[in-house]
Image (tube, rainbow, N blue to C red; front, top):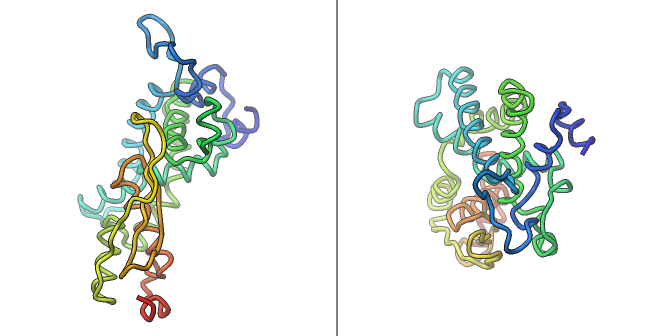
Amino acid sequence: MHDLEATIGYTFSDRALLRLALTHRSAVPVGVKHGKAKEPPLTNERLEFLGDAILAYVTADCLYREYPQLSEGELTATRAALVQATTLARFARTLGLGEHLIMGRGEEMTGGRDRDPLLAAAFEALIGALSLDQGFAAAAQLVRQLTQPEARLIVEERRFKDEKSLLQERVQGELAQTPTYHVIATEGPAHQRTYTVEVRINGVAMGSGTGPNKQAAQRAAARVAMENGGWNANETDSSLSSDV
């Protein structure tokens, strides 16, 4: 884990905290109770809870200070985009968290190391662990380092609405069509399901995305469709117009 510490720029005083932040519940043997009273936690779920709260506060504070021109609604939408699972999973990949995750063999064999929900949870847990080990300032610095470039893109491109709304507006306005969403795969146990959704325009598949629920997967699919259609740059893809 030394390379991970080098990437984030901090050396943990308590290496057990870092290991815990990377431990998925699938690594705990069947029959072992999670969070038993007076016993230390076995998975990263409690650290995930702490990291989630830190992320919410730090991103809100940064947006408030750096973008005085944004309304409350725009601030809220920007923060939501920054802390959604797909965005956090990208941050986790930037840090290389996937290769360090501790998980059960079954989870690993089904692609757990690159699954957005697991990566997002591990990233939140890492932020929580860093705060406990190095202090809130260290955790906040890592959050700002990763989220500020993404926030600038969101603000510059005026991506305040969710991806589904943006895609529908562009498609209805330019192509007189309405996007439809279709679940094409469902994976994982009931308590940790992952959905894959495909978005189609007039029957033509324009992108797919995954998420811990159908709504998140639809947003991820809409984001891919926006990119494939060239709409993020406020341009209409001529080939799309002729094909659908």
